Image (cartoon, rainbow, N blue to C red; front, side):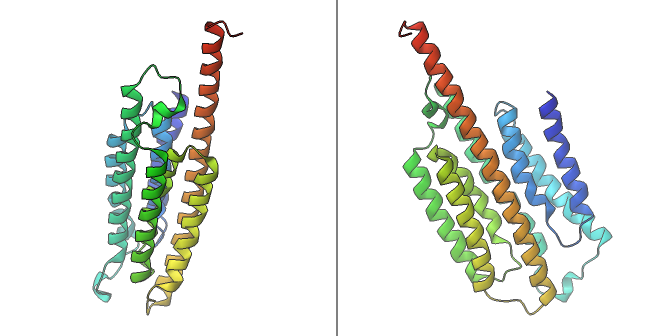
Length: 243
């Protein structure tokens, strides 16, 4: 209960930080909180939390620019609002993936093997789809100006790496998408406004922190599940008289 309460304080802190940091999208850390809450709350509230966090994404946006007004008419496209929409898409997609993992548990509640938790996706299928999705995201990122934070969508292939059951794969994917994010920023069309590009660089650096945090959480989850299943197998051997 204490851990759950602590995790739920994080969104409130992030919302305050988001409101009072001009031009920085602190709300991207909701992705990490979603995975943490999914793990701690027995996987039951992921959809509700994704919708709550999506609402907080835009609450933070509108509150922020009451404090730091922007002249949307000064440029043709409100990329800040669009970036918030990208974040909402990522949150909902992550909730969809996490809810599939939960259904895998429910269908085989007595299973002893780690595979039962991830029955909804085969490892190879998840890795191939994650790689293909990352390539598509990279191509889109290289086609638009760097102020549009397309790399937020990389949260989805990073999360899909859970199904590989490999910490090594998780970190390779995470470091890979971080590299692709900065390559896309430099390869894509440049903005005429230098301040916008500076802010975009800061936001991508912040996003790299989010990806690393996701990798840490996912790695801890894999290690925990592996240990739990080793203990269950040992318990089964004891009951069967092997020891």
